[in-house]
Image (cartoon, rainbow, N blue to C red; front, side, top):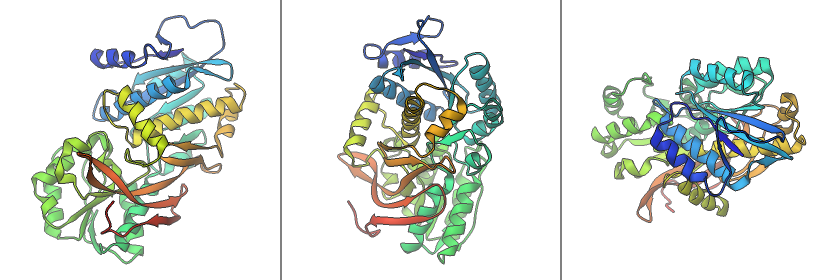
Amino acid sequence: MLRLTLEKFGRRLLVGAIATVAGSVPFVIAGTKVGAQDVIKIGLSAPLTGPFAENGKQMIAAAKLFVEQNGTTVAGSQVQLIIRDDGGAPDQAKRIAQEFVVNEKVAVLAGYNPTPTALAVAPFDTQARIPEIVVGAVASIITARWPYIVRTMYAQSQVTVPMAQWAAKNGIKRYSPGLDAEKAFIDEFTADGGEIVEAVRVPLQNPDYAPYLQRARDAKPDALFVWVPGGLAAALMRQYAERGLNKSGIRLIGVGDITDDAVLNQAGDSMLGVTTSMQYSAAHPSPMNKAFVEGFKSASNGTRPDHIGVAVYDALDLIYAAIKKTGGDTNGDALIAAMKGMAWESPRGPVSIDPETRETVQDVYIRRVERVNGELYNVEFDVAQKSHARAVEFRRGRSEGDSR
């Protein structure tokens, strides 16, 4: 059975969430007995409130879809998925992780968006020897520093370096740019002969991007590279259009958070032509992804999956597969060992877990916002095949002017 504990989760959203799985998946509210058989608990920490709540909605919908499709029995044991709201706050995420481990006796921790939440929990799960599956945090140091973390998202450099390489190869020579994205882009772009006009850092809690956008416009670069966390991208993109940068001749490029699939249609035609790099697009043309998108929409009242949604879906796939591989042994070291080297087909394409770094090995796509069947999509037109580090090889693709 699926057990959900939802703290600070709006009543309206909770009712919708229960309705999503009732009728197809046995559903147990916290406090209900779950039976005498062995139970394996997974603690999912998600930002259901606060500035990253849109990411939290993706996490909930992906988890519900996965359980609906795959059931709640693994290796002869019952699985309980316990979901709690960390608000995207490090202190709250740490407290919830401690409650998961000490009170709930979970076998696996999962979630953690943005990066500070994952870093806050990492020392505790390492001491407890509990796997932490990261689905939102992207700082490169996470897996390198903490041995019980496995990431089904991406390291920031994974999706940033391909964008810098593409920009350098497609006529962008002067550019105005988390610190990981800035460093990865600058290092790769300048190595390929590009010139950095100016690098501007904007406080995450600052909703007014206008002064920074004006500085970029005044610098007259060939392109403006932008990265902000996905949950904060809407305000930036709105102000980008309001200040007329979309008509200034300065091309907008960046990491895919700025054209998040979940909210892309709300941004309107000012997004047309924006080019980004990301490990997933709802427009990815595989049969598996098409089925995933339809299932996700059904589980989320019509919202598309984005890079967070697919990371959660794959995290649960990885956890289930690891439990099967260990025959139900939930010892933390056994589960981590089982996850290393594991490979499977994801809605984003073929993926695997690097046995040395515990990062996801995956393709990174270069996408352009286009209108398809009346809606805006991130349409893939090039792909970089890469592992967890900086080595990138463009396997196939079309020129910048070619349109699908």
